[in-house]
Length: 190
Image (cartoon, rainbow, N blue to C red; front, side, top):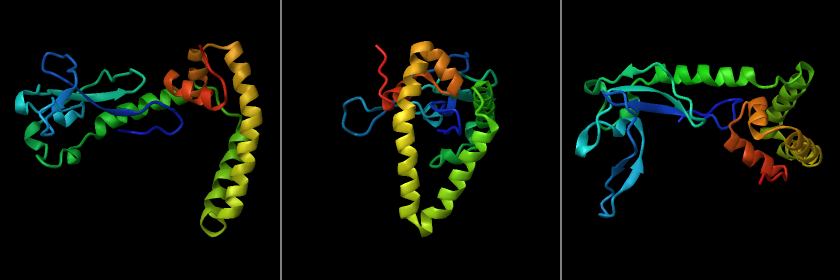
């Protein structure tokens, strides 16, 4: 799985297509209990062994539902048997990274002066973390207080004036990740 920077909830991974272009459902790996096994959808699980479907191509997919229009062939002869994670999946990852860049670009941009202050605070915290963690913790606590008070009021106003879809797009987030974020700010949607 690929974790985004600035596109909350847009977790990416390698998805697969069968030879006929369909997306297979999860496969079940027998863990020895005889109870049907665990459902998995890791790309390398679709190798055709044990009656599982054999993937023909790979592509990037995202937790938001996006899937790349570009698919790359899988040469199973080159996939290491016991270490499939060593197989080159960089092309789908680049496609997913382009997707998250589009999401981030479409989000409401943080004003430059505020972005600069946030960056300075992060740099300062990084420096303090090792040699003066108590001061770093005090700073984080002060930021939490701002977020607790102002974040709740701002989130409630945004939730009153905008739909979840509009807010998620403005934040570069998925609606699922937005729900968790709003809940942290004390905003429940019914």
